[in-house]
Length: 74
Image (tube, rainbow, N blue to C red; front, top):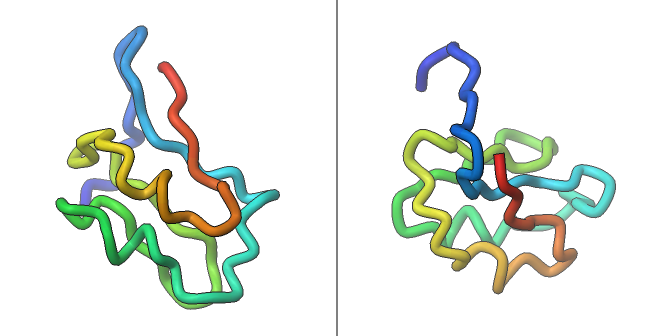
């Protein structure tokens, strides 16, 4: 993964994590269902989305138990 900051194009959709909703005290189901492995989680931290490879398919949105993932437009 690149250290460069990802800057979405205007109007581009992306998945974001609301860290105030994510309890990150359980197995992160979105990490397991992402078809391109765009969601990673290390230790007890909230998940991180790699926007360069995320398809914005919404599979993760459907399974997040705390509804901490959402789609935003850049």
